[in-house]
Image 1: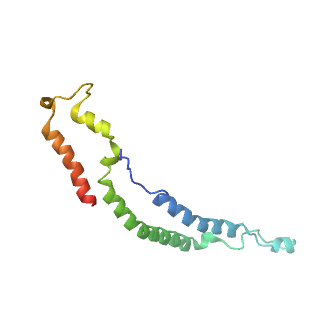
Image 2: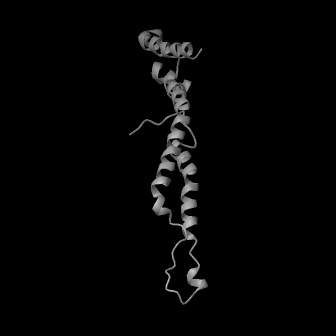
Image 3: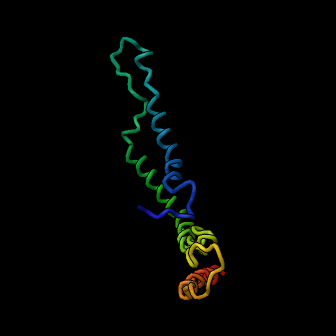
Length: 138
């Protein structure tokens, strides 16, 4: 299971590509819905009713255009994805509340914490993470 990200893009890469590619599909469907009128104009002729333009004959052009759209969106997403990746290392700052951090370090304390029961190494490690994050951000 992939770790849930605190920082993410909305709409997603896939959604942006779908929205930008949708007009191509609509144009193909619409253009194929126009039927030649010869049969209606000359009913005695033996002419099949078929689309005026058959996009499937040029499907490779449509597919190439869709690939190019996806390539351009990839280029557009590169820098934001790098920024997102940089911020992911600070995800731990958003995942735990100060109360939960305190509990993990000192346990469930209903009374004053005895200094003897505190793991100095654990506290130092936890504080070190936050200091490193602060230094990295500034």
